[in-house]
Image 1 (cartoon, rainbow, N blue to C red):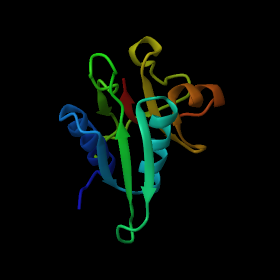
Image 2: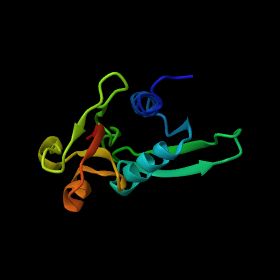
Image 3: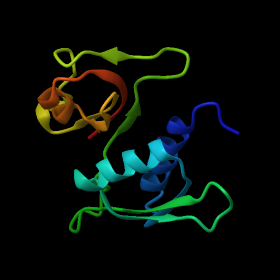
Length: 133
C-alpha cells in the first residue's frame, strides 16, 4: 500500500513516458479517474479505459501520447505539488499559471477536480494537486 496514491499515479505515468511505453495500467480510485479525464480533455493522453474486472478496486488503462515526428512524449513534466506531509492550497486569485499558460495545474476544489483555469473562471480555490506540461 502506498501512502500517497496520487504521487504513485503520477510516477507510473512519468516512468512509462520515459520508457516509451504505449499503455500504462494504474489501480483506480475516483480521484485518479477525474485526473485522467482532465489529462484526456487537455490533450496530454491519447485515450483511457476504466476496467472494473481487476478486483474490487478496478484499474485505469491509459494510452500515452507521443509526437508523431520526434517521438517525444507530450507530457514533458508531471509534478506533484500538494503532498500528504505538506498540503498546498490556493485561493482563486492565487492559482498559478504554468509555463505562461502552456501547462495546467490540476486543482481539487469543493466543486470537484478541475484545471486551474476552470477554477479561476468559477472563482473557487482548493488544493493544488499537480502541474502538467
